[in-house]
Length: 194
Length: 139
Image: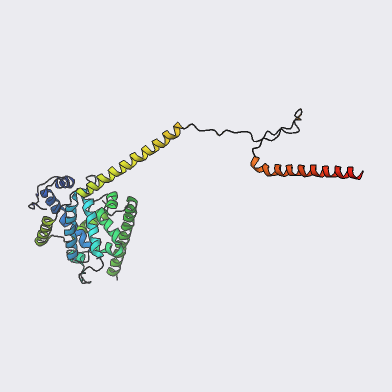
């Protein structure tokens, strides 16, 4: 942003795609509004994919910078959320696999940004369970489908896979998480009744 | 929405992801410093050049094909003059008892044989004359 950064307008009722269009035309205020709308959603997702909160924050920053730089390539036929998540996933992967020779931050293996970010709850968070039983891709697909409400096709697009892959992965992920919940419940009942 | 979907949504919502003022400031500062990649002039020029080169190549190829085709159209296909190398009349055809000589153009090949034949004829003639002379002298 070479001009003065604009504050977001909380009353902006334009859709994400309309804002992206305005930002493409040069409106920094429109882009600031997109940042305001997505920063928490993206950070929540990145906390589940990165090794530390610092990594998640770096990935968030890089995602917005990349989106701003390459806004001209945004195709308005896509949903903005699909596009920005695609960038976010790439950044999370890049941080997970540092380039050879790159300086690597030492991460405390006992630190878990997701566990740290989960508020005290009376039951196990399903996303912790999902992380244990699913691959990283299946986990991301499940998140995009049920937290971000992307369609199956959009999940495939965001993950640079085809729709069939997304459909099968989501079905298997649901089955696995469902089976894990059943197992947890069985174990809890077993403990309860001795 | 089924039970699993509802639980997934609820459990995602309790993940604390508040963006601290410091992080917000950092993001704003980095965006302020970021230059937007223009739909690159260089890329545009490269695209235009590629389009131009491919168009020229296409036109040149089309002209070449047209030229070749028109050249071929002017030249009427020349049927090679076929001279019968032999008129062979089957011997068993009734009423055809005349054997036509071969008109093969094989002079180069038959020349030496003809010379040899001439020499043999000459030798034969000499031998005949010699025999006749011997007979005359004997009787």
